[in-house]
Length: 386
Image (tube, rainbow, N blue to C red; front, side):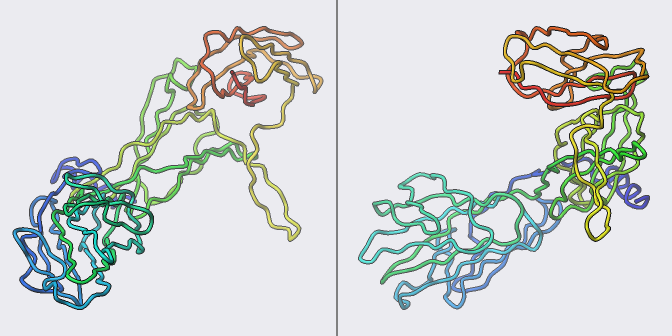
């Protein structure tokens, strides 16, 4: 991990900061050989790292024809299916291919999209856009059928099969792609160890990531009720979690993907979550005797909390009462947060009391309410405001 930090710092100094999906390339097919079924070109400067693009239509030849790739090169070739494949020596992102001249006839020519990755959609590009019904694209009418086929996300290859009738052909007019694709981490979670109180934050792995940056802001006023200084810590890691965070700390956290070193490429930051939304992980013993961790929405309460009505619209009433004798609470508060952990309401409450809460200034949605004693959460659950 230390080496990764050093490398990242060095690359920032050498290359500067690049965000994901930086630099969009648009090129024609004037590099297609005349005739050939396997030909390549290399983009040397635009993407920072040289990327070799290869067009394969074998065994059928294609031909460069006024900056487009015509498939097949000779329209007197036998009728049949022609595989078409574009490969990239480095992963690229959001590939789009401008395809022209699907013609109506008896029978008509058409395209079969049945490889991986599957195109994300078709968009118009002048002329008549061809009809698309997964997995095939057909002529929509006229002799100037023309549309972009779009593949979203990272890939090293796009491919399809062209069915040509007698005298049929298609043109590959243009190719467009982003040099870098760096997805933002998703499914952020936070768990509390029920024995130690330590917190573990985690997220789903990102395909192709070489690491992650985790940003933790302690005493973030958006999440925390404290007058302590706000301190932000950013750490680089190759793991998809960070464990053993302080049980007493309050903080916000977010994460982003590190996708490449040369040049240094980051995704956007994820959503920001608050540590007070962490869920307790309750240990259970299986029939085989193995211990596992299951999620529970709150710890075992020492007081009974009743909120009525829930769902609520104009108001709700919270009632508190003891369920364990001998407990004392010196700083009992009701805190309501939104699903991002931002505090939208807080007020002191008493045991064996009822408090009516006006909800007219709340937006409709799901909120989290907590009954807090000092730094300890005694009860946490959801409230729905309609």
